[in-house]
Length: 123
Image (cartoon, rainbow, N blue to C red; front, side, top):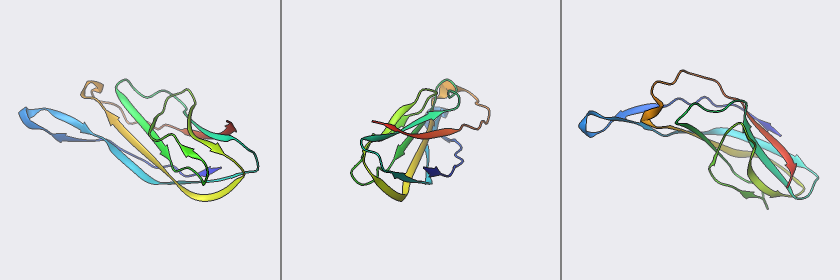
């Protein structure tokens, strides 16, 4: 499996009463290719380290033909299924969408780099 890496940064906007709320930002410029001769495979995703408190990173992968996407999956440092039901496929340019959101209670969060590892595993 092969994938590229996007960079996403949060934005803030002004709401009524002088309060600010963070906007969710997304990036769908990343794609992946998959080749497997196996049956009943799945793709899992995991972060190298946990996200800061009150900050969420989600990922959604377009499934290859015959597979099923789990939709928006919240990423953590524990592997989670993102696509299931993959059998004998060779497909490319499948879209990966990342969504970053935060609560106001996250405060000021220092810029950080996260590594998302996608793995083909037995389903």
